[in-house]
Image: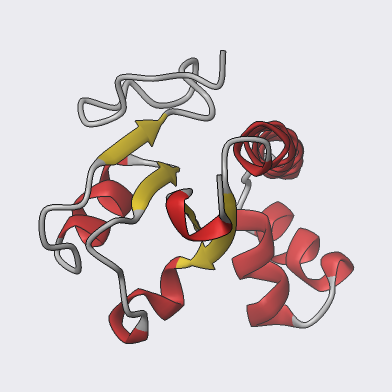
Length: 129
């Protein structure tokens, strides 16, 4: 089967709260200081980030075996050209699924909840397993 006959699988991801904080404050120590100053558990941010990264790696390993694979950060959604034959996999929260749907035109979507203990995810019926 030629590469043209394999669907392109687009994995839509988002930055974690930890990544967003580090972008905002430039370094992890500054971000941690901000969290601690506001009486927020920095460990929770670390655990969420680590689990999300593990789930992304697991998803990538599986999806690469299924066809052409393209990771896509949510910040690029508005400018990305989806093909009618694309299969879109979203790994994140309900809001990421809803945001992704705005840019699609009938492409199938598989929504994965990376952390069911953290998010109940009404739009996230699947886990990595």
